Length: 347
Image 1 (cartoon, rainbow, N blue to C red):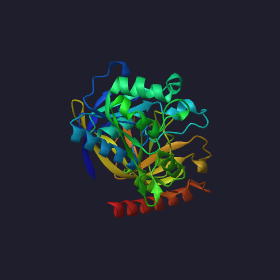
Image 2: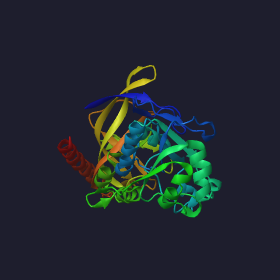
Image 3: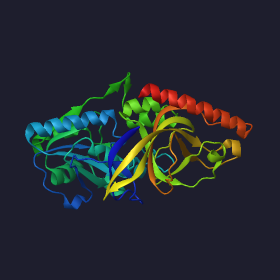
Image 4: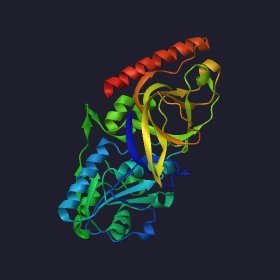
């Protein structure tokens, strides 16, 4: 069993209960772009950074190296909501790998000096690429170095790119650095590809591209006690963000982070347990609503109303309808045995 020291992070969407790992990096989060400090020799990068994946982390590594080399401040500029949720019809807008607060949590681990959260609106998207550079990047951030991914686009109709930034280097006295595509297992790492893997249940591959196990966070709510009747009580999880990407329906080897009753002021001890997660509609019982639930191994505490984090490690099988509850019970027993073995091999 793992035990971590966590910090309560305030302002998590509608809830202030989400338990996250204590971080001492000191990253300053700026949510009002009208009240930004003056950044000394700013080394900046800009993007949605959905998922904060392996490719993003190579950009952040370069960001830290360059800011240390020039004695400047490292600055990540990101957007909320995700730009495609504004620019795409609702039916085509992608679900996100990370909510805003999850993104902040993951970015704090990168030991960056500043995170600036820019409200992404339709008018903002219609700024020309040249005005984006002069009126937004230069006026507000005074960049010394701009580090960007190979495919970064900006401005109205995505007309701006790294070539335009380089054309402006002399005029605005900044230097542009490009990070090439990052390749893992012959796959170019991208948020789009990671989403596709999660949507098809390939969480093990998605986790390799992310650099950490994909997770969802939410409140434990009362269910219909079906799991308890079968001998496998589950924690039913209600997510707070409807735009959070949910993995494909099925059974997963998982780990669950739950709060401990022990606390000191706003600091919390938490424990991580292995578990069997199920995403599905309870077809054996004629269910119609999608549910996220997890049978937490070796755990019997009351956590109703608590926030937990559910991490997905491996796909076990698709969700399916069984002829009888007894058949389902036998299948769950086999799932639990298989999950314990897979997690044992991974530890």
